[in-house]
Image (cartoon, rainbow over all chains, first blue to last red):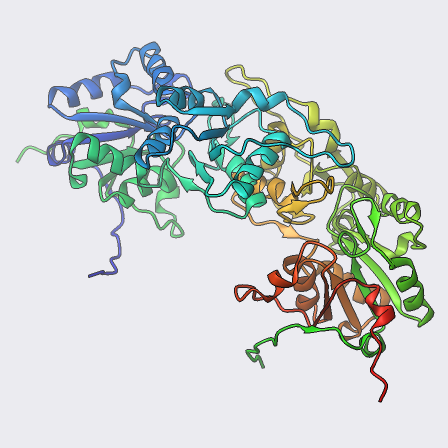
Length: 306
Length: 306
């Protein structure tokens, strides 16, 4: 049975303890929630410590595919946060985990449009790959009759953010998807914006994915937010009920939608790209359960004494 | 009043004279109709001469934006065809013509993701531009706090096929569209495939347009086929009734749709990318009025003697 439901407007978080007690796992988006660019957001270490002391499971998800889990672990470490690799789920890892989940054959290869993080995760998962940063300097020849050869054993093209994107990669990936029977088109994410530096908004992985979509006229299989692949993976891996998860993020169209698509509780923090005005704009149709300024509000928003 | 009509299946062209007599203008797609790569298709010069001798207006349209009208004129000349610049409508010209048609201010600038043809046509039309092949070697800096500056006077971003496409251009074009108030996003075409060489199909302008669509989350204004801009422009410029035009092309999704969108008669030739099997595939919903092997059939398909 299906029912059409209208989601109520987001409520300001007033009683953090009630929310904390109602779930067993918190999934945090990273940029805009834990850090901004290279700066830790105020009160984050104390908040995470408090949640751990209450026995909550903490998971960190990011659509950024340029780093592997291990590389992300170093970023947490540098910022003084005590987070283990196993708690980190980047879309680079999700791409490799997706291939494992469908038993992608080990004798097939993966063509990568993206950066080092995807290569590292594919390697850890035992897959053969080609492409990546190495193809960033390649050019096509313009002479008449020129034909680009491509590897007929490529069974999947993984596309993520790639600052070394070029026409060679577009054509190589397109040939694989178009001409290799059954070849998958996997996107780490379709984000319009990414955070290369915090000085401005940078065109995100959505542009590389849009390019390959434009030439193949195929829709990608997205493994990052807001697709539910990572949520399903986490729920299965840790044996968690999704109603026992609270997704915390700063973006309506990725984080909050991701939580809602997965059937979780959702909390929007205003420490990243979304302002209260954007949340309350009548054109905004994505309403989290709660919103608050930043996650350190968990430390101060207590139930009013009765 | 609107009516829903079911278009009948395409008929093989049996009486060319009847079709020729029923219209005053023929619009020809170029690649797959006039030439294939660098080779003229059999019988083309004689066919064009015959149509001219009957007083027909001939127009040549192409979604290819890498060349200007003048540069295309040279290609016709090299192939021994007697075609003047004024008869050629490439999507590079269409982009400039579109800007003129909306009185795009001469004190604004155009950022170009594309090749030389667009730059040449903008220059002829008197517009200031930046970008193009020149930005093909530019890279972004990766240091923290780095910000890409962009010209606040850019009022339109024109995107066409660009074999020197890179992340610098994606970010520059995205910044203009996102941050300059009212900045237009104009696509020369969204073709999945282009013909760099005739040895294989190459990823087309649709990939560059898809990239900018992915990062701006905006739909482009398309000036090439199958959008009707060029058809409307031609009809106005030459004072032709659209019912007096026959569009001749080798692609269902651009040429034939372009003709149908414009309210013209349509003839599919099988000398390019579309085979009879593709035309007659039950999943194909685009049916031209007529189909034939190649335009030189105009010379042989006469009415049966009564």
